Image (cartoon, rainbow over all chains, first blue to last red; front, side, top):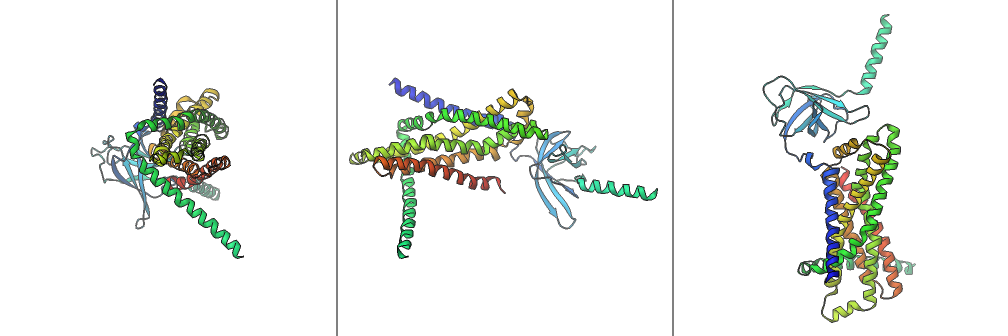
Length: 157
Length: 259
């Protein structure tokens, strides 16, 4: 009897250890608490160039993540990229004239959408469109412009 | 010429027969599982043999794999000034790949070989036929509890492997090499996704558990009832399980993460 009981205890502690490990992976490693699971509202933003923005890239406001990029499509009539942003529903006081920009985190980091709040009294809601946008900075373009302006300076002298 | 063709045909038919018998065995094992809920005692014994006894090797290897990942990752990441992402690297590689795969390889070597040897020897000493004589279905009485035990134990073992690996990487990275404590965890939590990474890792380990246990039981049940046959079957279990795990891992990874 005592032998079978100790065996049961061992099996029980093995299974408990397994579940603790799973729990650890879920909570500590992947941070379940802040994992947004698809709830929130969608707003669209049109950019001339989105650089290397990807689906699931963060959307931040004042540096705090308020949502994620939900989808990226190309509008063949206006030649623009249409990015739909899923904002978590607890951030429901974002003015509808906010400014959406595409930034790069660090020199080699990933790209993300940064929102600058505007002054409107109306807030963004499901299906709205952000009209004020700034495209991603493409490094080659900036270097090209820089070289071009340098060359013009040299000519005018 | 015709002899060679005949030999090829014989090999082909043999392989097909193996596959067929394997699936029929799996089917009858699955049929035996509901009866287990009336006798959980059998299952507990097998979880002890398959899971608890494998835990030591899994725990030790998990910790050391994590520590090595911490060392090597730090060495490479520090060349780019990105030591802070060490936590992401350690956790992602463990949860996605190394946890399920290495745990399954160890599981095949530790538990799978034991299962094959045990059942093969039962066959060789005619215990299985004895059970049949007593109108006890050996598949239900012997194989089904072992199968379910493997299926339950494998994801738990893989989770223990990954968790201890992360702790090992933490110990080396933060404790010995001086990576910032907060950055290690916060970067990890920001980049590792519960669905994308953790759930997929669990699914992988479930599949590996099924395949490893299935192969072990099949080899044991159909082993030639001699000491040589049992030894061959045991070898085949380890080789086939390892190859199956590595091959399936590629397919599962392509299905889960490649879009």
